[in-house]
Length: 277
Image 1 (cartoon, rainbow, N blue to C red):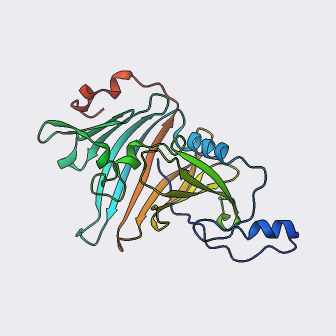
Image 2: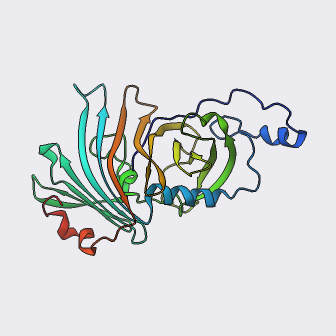
């Protein structure tokens, strides 16, 4: 789950020579306030499914380092962790490897349930749904971001806003811009999510998160895109909360493997208390 910092810049002007019908389509603006070129006959849901396959596969196992920057910290805080994601089983497991004071802390998600084991007090506690949006390990990511209690496929409808060609640069192409609109009965907090997804390889480039009033609250950007098992996978992710100047959290992925078979014993509360594996 990592790759970052290639942010789409603002649309710089109308394309030349567009037909009247296309121009009318261009007048439609995204929720982020940017006008985009129309993308006719493109299934937004299918694009959303492709990016999930690129980013998560059926299963994935990664090791990464998270760096937290905040005016409240005397120096950036770094946390190294290992994560296992099983999409078909709706399961996830995370183990903290560093720093030493947090080593062995573990998180287990099964369906809509999340548990956390804290080794220094030898205690396993269930994290209720009301705490899913709380900070994960003191970062700008939430519990939900890391274990995906909510689903960007199942809990949202997907609307194609258009094509943004300003994302094209060396090694990166133009992107689809898709708005994720939550179902009325979905247990999600975001009023909407706007995503930039590279057209050719379905690589995530950027996400903007809005509240129900339409205020943009945070931005996530992806970069350092590398080939992994036939995927163009971002190895750096940056989360920036807009209401907290000077705050930013970056995740750098050191290794990632897809579509391997996991032992069911990995996703158990018993495994929370075991040593680092």
